[in-house]
Amino acid sequence: MGEKLTKRDVEKIEQEIEHRKLVVRKEAIEAVKEARAQGDLSENFEYYAAKRHKNQNESRIRYLERMLKTAVIVTDASKEDEVGMDDIVEVEFEEDGEIEKYKLVTSIRGNSMENRISIESPIGKALKGRKTGDRVKVQVSEDISYYLIIRSIEKTGEEGENIRGF
Image (tube, rainbow, N blue to C red):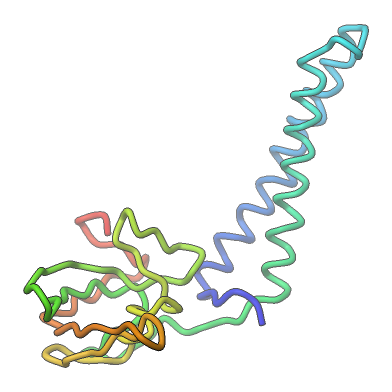
């Protein structure tokens, strides 16, 4: 089973593939040609850098195409009162009363530094489909778990972004 992606994720990946094939590929091939024309390849750093850039672009294209072939499309729709994809959830950690806000996203968009948590992470799995006021058990491993209380759910717009940049 592949990555879980929303239709919007698929569209963004397809756009990146198209850009890499039509723009970056041409630029990379031209850079290799220009560097090759400079003469002796054994000491030509620009040639090796251009080749490396070209190969990295081709590798990225293959990676993205493989991701799309194996992807599982998930819906980002949820009920108005339930935590769903792209929603911002304010939670209180029961242990210490600390309050955090998280945005539920697919795994490829997850970024803990920006409080974007994957729907496949322990917190994401525990929160998805729950409602404001619910006490949620987050199971990290067989031996470790903790509880959260959902304080609020903020639905985001169509693009999945709100004015706070979450």
